[in-house]
Amino acid sequence: MDLIRVHNVKFFFKKLRATRRINTDNNIPLSFFLPFFLSDQTGYASVPGLAYENQGWVTEIEGEIPKEMEGTLLRNGPAMYEREGFIKSYLDGDGMVTSVAVKDGKAYFRNKFVVTEDFDEEERTGKYIKSSIFTAADPRPFAFGQRLFRDLLGGDISKKQNGAYNVINWGGSLCAVDYKKPYALNPDTLETIGHGNCPLSSTTHTSHYRTVTEPDGSRRLVAFINEVNWRVNHKNEDGTEHLGTTNAVFYEFDEDGKEVARRKYPYPSSYVHDLIVTENYYVLFDCPIKIDFKKTFTDYLTQNACLSELICEDTERQPLFRIFPRRGTDMKVRTAPADYWCYAYHHVNGFENDDGDIVFDTCTWDKFTLYFTDITNPNGKDNFPRMKLSRFIIDMKKYEAKHYLLSDVPCELPITSWDYTGEKYEHMYLSTSVGRKDGVNGPMQALTKCSLKTDETKLYAEEQWIPGEHKFAMEPFFVPRPGKDLDEDDGWVVALVHDARYENSDFGGRGTEMVIIDAKKFSEGPVARLRLPKYVPYGVHGSWSSEYIAGPPKPDELARLEELRKNSDGKAPISLGHKDIIQTTSRKEVEELDLRKVGAGIGGALLGITALSEMIGQMGFFQ
Ligand SMILES: [Fe+2]
Image (tube, rainbow, N blue to C red; front, side, top):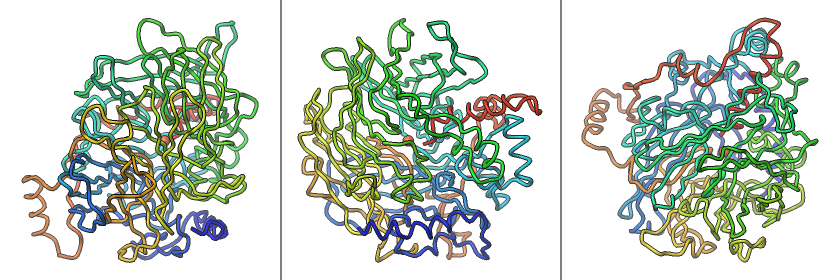
C-alpha cells in the first residue's frame, strides 16, 4: 500500500479530527464523508448506532472453513463515537462486540453494542453527557469550571464507561471489559446483562488476561488490576519513601468461572498495561511514565488535552520488571531493571527457563507515545514510535533484565497458542507493518509468524502474509486443531482484516473479512476468507473461545425477532434491543468501587491531581 500517500494526507485528517464540533443535519457519521484514499484511516469510521446491529450466516466465503474448526471469534472495540456533531476520540467510542461462531464449515455473524449505563443515558438523551478519557473536548456545560473544580480540585474524575476494550468467554460467562467493572453479556445473543451476575463481571480488572494450565492439567484465567493510591506513600526496604502506593491485585478463575485465588501486593506506584503469567510468577513491566503537571493545569482545562494526555515519558528512569510470587506464602515483590529503555503495551508470552530465570517476550516501543493518538493520527515521523519484537531474560539471582532484539519488523497485538501460556514455546503471531524504514512504522498491513527455539535469542523463521492492497490486519488469535499431542503450531490463525476498498460495501467503500490461515503454512495465506455482513471498525482486543456461542437464534430469540418484524416498517434492520438489562450492582456501588473520591475545595488541589493519577494508573493505560 502507498505508505507515503497515507502519511501525506494525515495533515488534512488531523485537522478534521481536531475539529471539536461540526454541525450535521442528519444521522450519517461525519467520518463517512472522509475521502476513501485515506485507506487505513477508513477502519476508524464510526457506525450509525443501534440500527447497525446485525446478525446472520456468513454467505460470502472464498476457500473452505476447516470442518474440524469449532468455536467463536470474539472482538470488541469502539464503534460509534459521533453524536449530534460531537466527535469523540476513537478509543472513547461505544463498544460493539462482534462474534463469528464457526462450526461444521459454517459461520454465523453478530454485532451488538455493549449497553453501559452511560451509553443507555446518551441513547435516551441523544447526546453525549459525560467526558471521556481520550477526548480533549468536553460535552459538559461550563467545561472549564467542571474540569477545574470538579475534576482537578474536587478529585471527581469519573469518565464515561464505554465497555469497548475486550471480550472474553470463560467459565460460562461472556464479559465485555473496559477499565472499570466488566459487563456480562448474554452468550446466545450478545445482549448486555450487566454487572455482577458472575464472578468475572463482579470484580474490577483490566482488559488483559492470560489463561494458563495448572500442574494438575486444569485451566485458569488470570486477570489483574492496579489499585493506585497516591495518598499513602510506599515505604521502601531501605527506609526511604516512594510517592504513592499501588496494590497489584491478581485474580484467578477456574474453569467454572469461580474465583479460586486473589493475591494483593503493595508496591511503589507505577503504570502497567498487560501481564505475563508463568508457573510461579506474575510479571508486570513498569515503564517510565510520569504526570505532566503543567499540561494538567493548562491544556486539560482549556480542552486542548484529554485526561490520558496528562501522562508523559520519564527519561530519567529505566523500565523495571516487577515480579510477584504466584504461589505459597512468599509475598515479596522483586524488581529487575531492564538494560534497554523502551515502553511496551502488549506482551507475547513468558516462561521460566531451566536456570529459573524468566524469559519475557514483548513488543517494545522506542519512545513513549499516546497509543490512541498515534494509531489514529500518526504523522510517521514525530510521534509514531518504532515498535520491535523484543525478548528480555530476567536473571532471578541478580534481578536484572537483559534485552535481545528478535525482529525489527514493526509489530503489535501479539499472540501465541493459549495452551502454552507461561510455558516454553516456539511460535508467536503478530499484526505487523511491512516497512522497516528507520523511524517510521507503516500501518499494520500484514500478519507475521515468528519462531525461535526455547532459550534462544534469535529467530529461526519469520513468515509474513500480506492481505493485499488497501487491506489492514487486526489482532490475530491462534486456534489449536482438536486432538492430542499435536505440534504447538498445528492449528489456525484467525484475524479480521479491514478492506478500505470493498467493492460490495454498503458503508462508504469499507468492508471486513475474517481470514483463517493454516499456521503451519503461514506464508501461503488463508485457507478461507469470510466476507462479514457488516463493516467492523478496527476495534481493540478480543479472544477466540473454543465454545460455540452466539450462533443462530434459539427459539426464544426467534420469537422476539418475529415480534419485532411484525412491528417494523420493513425499512430498518431488525435487531433485538436491550430492554432486559439486569443491573445486579447499582451504578452508585460501581462508581464507589471503581473510584476513590477525595475531598472538594481549593485545598484539595494536590489530592485532586493525585486522584487523577490514581485513575490513570488504575485503568492500566486503557485497553
Ligand atoms: Fe491492550
